[in-house]
Length: 376
Image (cartoon, rainbow, N blue to C red; front, top):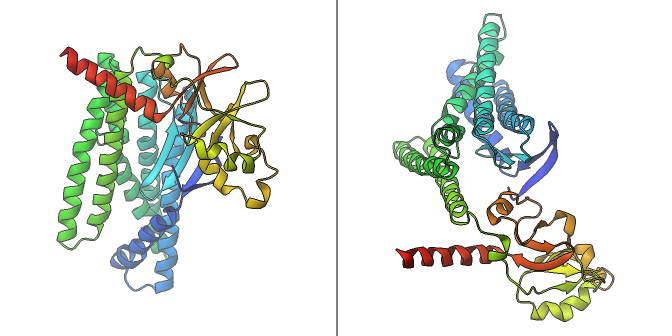
């Protein structure tokens, strides 16, 4: 996810935090300190409510991290590559490659809600236990709130609609029953769009009745609609590209640049004539050495442009997405890495034979759609 910062690793997976996380902590902390706790336990000081609200919000953030970490740990145990875990204002997101079997997909999906259920039950039990002791009512109330929040999180995530975990469960079961992964993904995606619209409508109605929390619910619904639409598009793209090779989509010949050229010399000459925003780099032997994205040049300080070479500011070949000409396009797209992504460099050994950009994929799918419509 863009605009997120790496802050460490969890279970060996890079952990990132989005700039909206402080907003999440503030909203939950404010709601807990300013509304829930004073209603449950009146008569405490403002400082006590504030501290308890902040602690509760931070504990909820840790619960979200535990939920996403469960997905990541389960995926790695099933041999699925996990790229990162990101916390943001609407919860968390675990970026990973797609499971190769419905059983693995099912286990990865249920691990998060199951963790939230366990955390919720433990927090409720601890809260009830503490409430029996004198002077522990406020910490007990925070734990009870945390327990119910985790249980609500688990139940909400189990709703049968992508991109929620419940949608992944339905998708895995349908994939197992029918053997058709794309059909299962489309079904989960459509249910996600329906759920998102319902959440938007419900949130707006609550807001009109004076409940500001309705805006939050509508925002979640908006995100669900967007994510579900993206998954539908991905499923349709996978179905359309089935059986096609990299050579069917790549552009050739390829516009390239020499990696030994200085940044300033490139800006003064070839950059002006470049027709694309990303150019493969070639070394002295004519072998590909990396990928230069022209916007990267704007971040090079002017005094360093005379000495830095293009290879010093480009993405090295080891971090680029590459494939062979005869590789299946569907499999190549599934293996896109966050650091590399599009465009894809098509290599025949050490020889650059073509490049696949987002425009190439769109053009290919449009051509296939026209061909199908013509046949119909």
